[in-house]
Image (cartoon, rainbow, N blue to C red):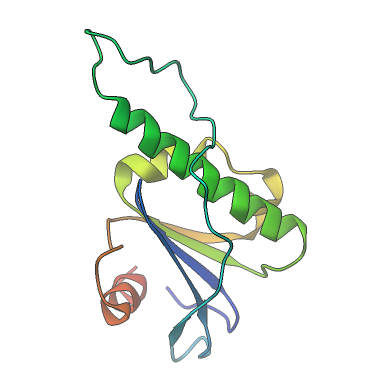
Length: 133
């Protein structure tokens, strides 16, 4: 995948977010870390996950809420005109939850998605994953 200069790349899972910008050009991807507001994790996940004996995993609900909070922050950034194009790289489960919260303006700026957990990986691993698509 070739990305224009200035493209935002969000690398996320249910607990972490790393934000980058392409400081290179379409022919030479070069991701540099970008500042972003702290994600509070209080977003509302979709569905009705309740902690109970039938579904004891409250941590999954917390991860879904964090994913929703990431998208809320990205939606706001797009609506404020701070994003020209965006690629989202996320763990498959997190990406599924994130998709449910995309604003139509974010969806219009979306250049691609990669369903892969790369939050603990190096920048070069993220660049390689983007270039292989």
